[in-house]
Amino acid sequence: MKPIDVKSLTEEELTRQFADLGYPAFRARQVKSWLDKGCTSFQEMLNLPATLRSQLEERYTIPGVTILRRLDSRLDETAKYLFGLSDGETVESVLMHYHHGWSQCLSTQVGCRMGCSFCATGMGGLSRNLLPSEMLSQIETAQADKKIRVSSIVLMGMGEPFDNYENVLRFLEMLSEPGDVHIGMRHVSLSTCGLVDGIRRLMKEKLQLTLSVSLHAPNNEIRSRLMPVNRRWPVEELLEACREYIDATGRRISFEYAMIAGVNDSDACAKELARRVKGMLCHVNLIPANEVEGKQHRRSSRERLAAFSGILEKSGITVTVRRTLGADISASCGQLRRQCAKSPEKTGDMQTEVKSAERYEIYPGREE
Ligand code: SAH
Ligand code: SF4
Image (tube, rainbow, N blue to C red; front, top):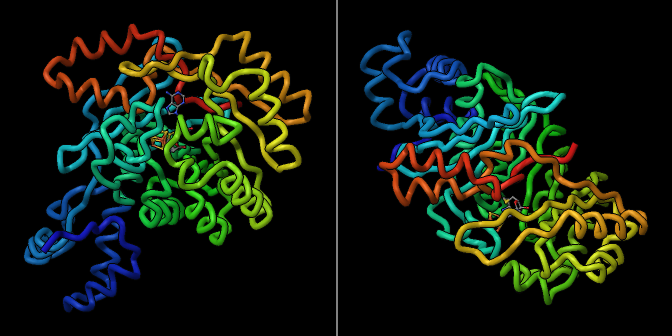
């Protein structure tokens, strides 16, 4: 039988399972309190009888992440982690410092199967979904490593959150449970490539989080070229679901728009985008696209970016340009993992390679 992830269970669920096994409820409470303290092994739960500890070890696991690499920016306090999972898989996460505190960009899947043409994460396809406890552990591990408290998170690392819906929702619930991590929903952003069924499901939960939608193009012709998901849910359907989401939650949506030279950055694109989103409770976040090894696309120039945002502003659309943090280390999400997979033994080379990769500026970061 596959061991159960004990950390992703609520106290109620654990108590029920313990009752089925003939253990009293207070044992479940004891185990929960060890887990909340960051305990990673049943053998360390010293107030449990040794026989129970061994039985628990057979039946349950305590998944978590370990730090395989940490790249520290020399420009600011940004740190990029490569985390190892218990089955040997790896995911990335970035810790950023803002005047309002520490923000962490988390992964929700190992890889991604959405295949967006500009994205490094999508290049290797999907390996597996992350468990709720593995998402939480990214925060716990970074907090313990840097001796800080993370006050906001963005689900913008590797993976498509709505392709791992149940686990992501359970993880969001865990943010308000006792333990070392306390993050209110208003300090959570979730980014999707536009899975309309996920947007419709989330709107029923009425959560106070910020929904980001990766739009990246104003029409189907360009969007379908960049993002295969658009063939399933075209721009009109996506924007309709976004309008419904805004009506249902009263929350502003953030549209992410990666500026790719000669592809989606013309004046005509800006005007079309403005027409599409006019009147919506939203803002547009322009991201100078990261150039990815093995991909053709190039980042738009500063001048293009300024002209594009100018057109949106003139049409009354709120627009921000993503700020640069950790410019010297931020190979866009998915790149560090790919580099390590290529030559795991060459730690030194990999570090130098990434540190000098100025051309991989910007992602991730967050507008202020
Ligand atoms: N799968 C989700 C969240 C993870 S990707 C999504 O697609 O929204 C997080 C953000 O990074 C998305 O807006 C995505 O489009 C963007 N992104 C991916 N690769 C990028 C690149 N090379 N340059 C700029 N933005 C990129
Ligand atoms: Fe997946 Fe998001 Fe990358 Fe698209 S941009 S491949 S959805 S991680």
